[in-house]
Amino acid sequence: MPDNETKTFSVSWRIQRVTVEYAYVSVPVVNDLLMEQPDRTRRIDADKMGERAVEMAKAPGVKWHPQDQNLFLHPIQKAPEPDER
Image (cartoon, rainbow, N blue to C red; front, side, top):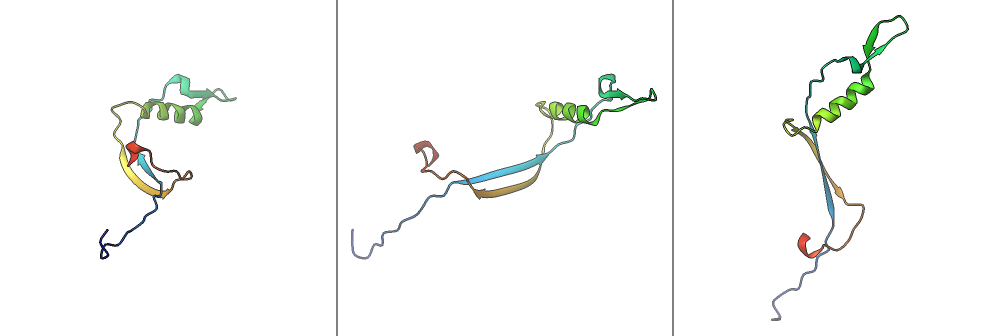
């Protein structure tokens, strides 16, 4: 190496990126999402409806919108694999 060339060194850090997205789904109010009350009226079971909404959001046609993105150091630091360079 010629005298005028400087060697440099670096340290690889494993970084993690988490992207948060949101979507809207319309959950039909159907009988299996209703709970009967002591006075014989019925109300929506919010837990069941939330579960249904999450299941519906897994459908391939759901439109997702970016909301936020966070970068942090990955909790496990390791050397990159050959295909990760």
